[in-house]
Amino acid sequence: MIELNQLCRTFMLGDQAVHALDNISLSISPGEYISVMGPSGSGKSTLLNVLGLLDVPDSGQYRLNGTDTTALSDNARARYRREHIGFVFQSYHLVPRLTARENIELPLVLAGVAPAERKRKVTAILAQLSLTERADHLPNQLSGGQRQRVAIGRAIVMQPRLLLADEPTGNLDSQSGSDVVNILEQLNRQGITLLVVTHDSALGQRARRHIRMVDGRVVADQPPGSAAQASHA
Amino acid sequence: MRSADLLHFNLQVLLRHRFRSLMILLALAIGVAAVNLLTGLGEGARAYVLSQFSLLGNNTLIMLPGKKETSGGMPPLTGESPRDITLDDAAAIARLPGVTAVAPMLVGISEVRFNARARDVVIAGTSSDYFRIRQLSVQQGQPLPTVALDTASPVAVIGSTVKRELFGNAPALGQWLKAGDRRFRVIGILDSKGQAMGMDMNDIILIPVASAQVLFNQPGLFRVLIESDSSAAIPALKQQLVQLMQRRQDGVADITLVSQDAILSAFGNILTTLNLAVTGIAAISLLVAGILIMNVTLISVSQRTAEIGLLKAIGAANSDIQTLFLSEALLMALLGAGAGMLLSELGLLAMRLRFTDLAFHTPWWARLLALGIAVATSLLFAWGPARRAARLSPISALQSRAN
Image 1 (cartoon, chains in turn red, purple):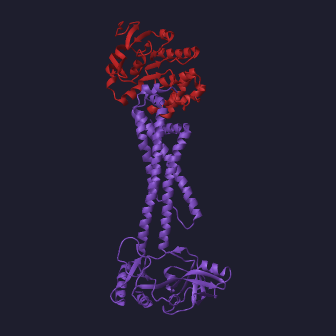
Image 2 (cartoon, rainbow over the protein chains, first blue to last red):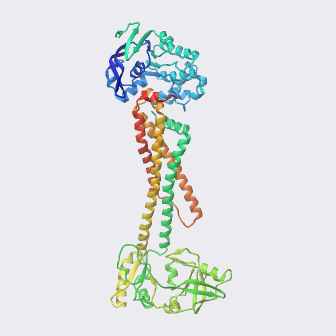
Image 3 (cartoon, rainbow over the protein chains, first blue to last red):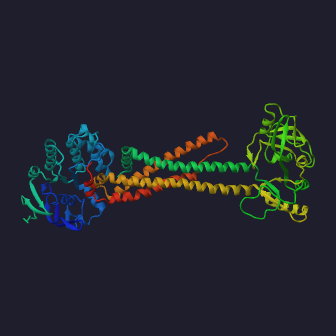
């Protein structure tokens, strides 16, 4: 499903080059449950952004479902994000003026889906995430766990095949956090490919495949069942 | 994105940021209202001035003594010449073919007394044709008698102000006024009529022209109003008048002929220029509103950076983001312009109710201009910030601030 080949991404901090991604090669199959861990500044988030087509690598190749994404135009990348990729962020990133229902509906609105079909899909998602009673509440009237559930609803409403989660439990207490993790794992069991970036080793250990990054390199990939073997640097 | 969804999204933004939206709407509304109000007032004033001059029909000529050779600019309203236009000249003009009315005028100011009351009043010596040319009528009594021009007669038709000042509520008809050392019997009172051609028709006394010659001891006429049977015949009549006066004034024709068109176009030009200048000033206020929109859109972009990043993450292309911000500015411009137009219409309505004889109306070109400037400045000034928003990298946008 995902093929990364010698991916590089370099940022300039002042006059110093920071190698956020340093020759990353990875292969991810459909339905995998992967955690990416590593210290701050190890390039986890950059990897997530590149995988999510939010950032473009400087060199290397990224094939998603067989398509070379590095050659895509901005509009085409936007369409890919919309149709194939869902994002869940640590700080939820809900639009504060929109209700839970409207936030979940937003990707459908951007995609130009007809209102009747939008309503049907959003209602189903609300029920699936036990948010039906909170549907018409604004984000600031919701608890952290509820907010993250709304964010997950928004991420999956377009039925993407890849779900990218950046510290999904980082802002939550342990109870809400485990609720959210349960939902994510449930989605993974239904077939969605789940990639979680986290500092939380307990959360990281729950994944079936663990990737560890340091200084922009993959230093561990367990269990090493993938095509690209990690080399201990 | 569907248009209905786009509109809904934008309206939600405007409602959520009520204060900000209100400020922009206010600025735009004031700008648009200023353009509409000022042009409306200007047009009203122009229409008023022009209507005053068109009281004189377009088949009327004014002949003034003295030749004014310069062309362009204001035609002379009073002539100064050593060579008078005489009553005989006026009588000869009346005999020209196609001339339907001739009103000689000899104007002066004299102290007018009735019993103990005295007042300086403009006294115009003229003929009964003056009533016809100027479309005057009397509310009481009768107009000047139709007699030969050189026949003096001690009668007077007085304006309504003169009547009130000298007689109060007492009847004036048949009373004898004293003007200078002469006495005139009041035979008529003019209908109220506003200012026209620089004369207040309420504060005037009309007497036969021959009587005025005696009263002011002056044979020369101040001007002669000449009415033709059709406006098409005016150019030919001008020629005939020049030829006639040439014969009568030893080959010189020391006169100036003024038609209503000349006066109207001169005044019209001045007032249009003035109106355009005022509109320009008002348009500047719209420009200021545009700059405000730019600033607010910039603030909006930076406030909503995280939202822009999010929209991109869930599938909005750069062009979608740009559309969102531009349509927001457009919506604001249309709402503001609409409010401004409503405001100015109400203002002009109030003015019309207050000054009933002035027709204050914003011309269509001014409304379109105001709307056009409002929309153009909004889009123009929102363009930069919208582009900036579209170009934001989604990652840094998302990291900028948590919601």
